[in-house]
Length: 431
Image (cartoon, rainbow, N blue to C red; front, side, top):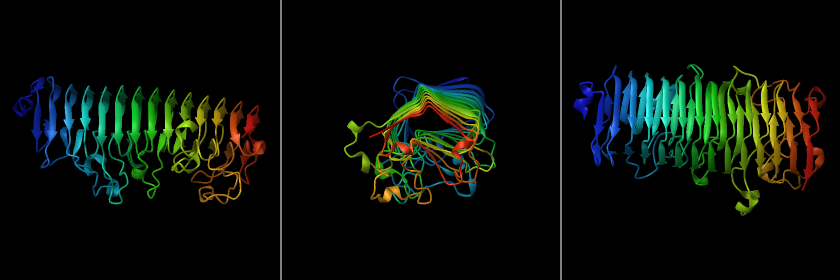
């Protein structure tokens, strides 16, 4: 098989059965028009003595297709010394024992591949243009840091300015870190022109989907359940709050639409760094019938949270339309910025932590300078990581259910003028 790859065969077929590896299968640098495909039952097994970046490594190739085989790693336990790369190293440089690593390439397709028991990332796509990840099945992957909490590993990572990527029709099940993640440092080119759609994500201890440092990415029609589980693997110390749809860095001209999640032990949608984009028709539902005691369910947070930690953006021109958020500990929406449109959203079963009822629990003392922040339906602030001006937002026709006091329907931090925003026709119900 290695000889076939070395001589530049256009199609290389894996033999049926187990193929044991102690080093990577390397697609020769500069290779073009290669298909590596499996026979029925083909499985690459990474033996305990495996040394290398990944079971399959490709750097500087074009028109590569990997299809119809399985990869099984050596994940006998979850312990590792990994946390996050040092000195802003690329994840592809920092982690070993991955499933597939693609670097500096173009026109790459990974289709119908099953990947399990990988200690780091089942798939890393690094600085690559035009990649398609289709019908991939990932399960039981990722490890924990020295404190026994997730170290972000376990899912699909797209990094360092990758463009024209698509992740679709895939299933990710029982991973310790983020399931699907675009990541680049502030010094790096942003990911661009991506599509993440029709994926199913179950039982992850960090984010279901995180869009980091990107532009023109669509996240649509994905489904998930048990986001932030098991609780013992959540990285509370590292502020790794689980989120169904997360954002980081500078993200613009992107759309999150038609995604549905249940049992989210964290936030529904985090928009820290999101601007000039649309968030519509998404659902996060935590049903009371599934929660033995919703007021002590670890990790419940805001429904939707705006933020502006990245200095290259402002929280402006976001359309938040027809989203349903049900069953979260704090408010439905934490809003900052300007010229945002908040319309036709449903925030149901808010303030499950009882932050509007004295005596307040420790969970309700997280923002003592803003006492209304955790108990209001929609709360306007002037700081989402950095000071900002919150004005000229349109907040209309939203439904808010579950407040301890209807006067907490739409409130603001001292210094934020509610009259500088258009607020009308919102419907609020108490308990």
